Length: 466
Image 1 (tube, helix red, strand yellow):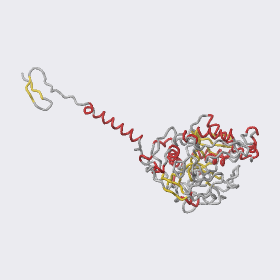
Image 2 (cartoon, rainbow, N blue to C red):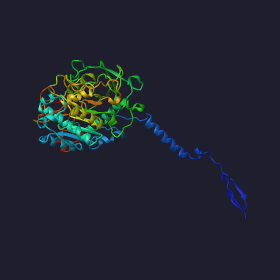
Image 3 (cartoon, rainbow, N blue to C red):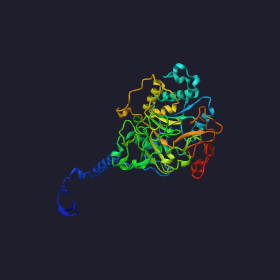
């Protein structure tokens, strides 16, 4: 009996006895394993894209939209991407504790309170040098010690990062969106060590500096103002290969590279020439990142921290309306309504102001420290050696947003226990700088109002004045 077999090529043949199988030639491994090769090349392309500059982060123009990038998702947690939020509060100011607790709850924030103290409760032997600081007003001494208590908490608990609030702090309902954009700026300003002006990757625009020696912050002894403000768009930094190194355990950048994120204040100067860099080099020490058409920024005529401030913030005249800027705090800064510290920064500040010496209002002292100056502790004090020529690790890195992301809220008939900037008190109801203020909309939020249903206290076509 004959059997018919079909070979591999479809040809039939008569065979007898056993079946016939055509001999197959062996292909090279890279041809016989196409899926393995495809997978390998895919992973190689992904690695190259992530590590050598193919990653593009889109920054939405709509202030309600979130940045869609995994590196800033931790900002959505209950501590805004920090390990803890610490709130400074005097125990007898239960009104303030109630208000900030409610405001935080509506924004899904988790708070830890730090007990404040008054100057009358501090023993004379507990003050650092010089002896003259015991003559300062009680409120100023108490404020200093309360901030030291918060820094002590950060160091003692070994917190990598912490956000410190004063208990009259306020924020816009778009706080998460604002902080995401600030985080992108913070990572670039603290992590990039390039000389930006020598690179063709960065498009730098020189904006006329409206600050002068007369109008700049007088808390600094050395002016060092720049004739022009080197500026770059925040979005341009994060296009393709222009982005800085990837995020670490903090969305705000490697905490070992920054000291203070000063994002709640009542005025900040533009950055100045750094003694650690050559003039007129543009580096992250003096560059300004801009975010144009930011709907969370009030119109220029509203950019003023207090009703007794003589003139508008320089930001109002230097940049187009609704521009938010980010930069180093080397031009002076005032009011510590909200600031974040790294473990490095907390240790440095606690050593400087809790151990080594302190002599003045804490926010002004911190402003000088961030600008590279130490406290003036009298003619008999031996100053620290100059940091000029030291390694970058010695550089004090404090970062700011203008206008501030957090601001002082002035409640109805609720004066502060400490005088405001300029020697007066802000007694009228409102919060400067914040358009959709949580505090100003607190009743509406509790009643269920959301988003664009809330009241804008600083609309382009009007707005009250405090």
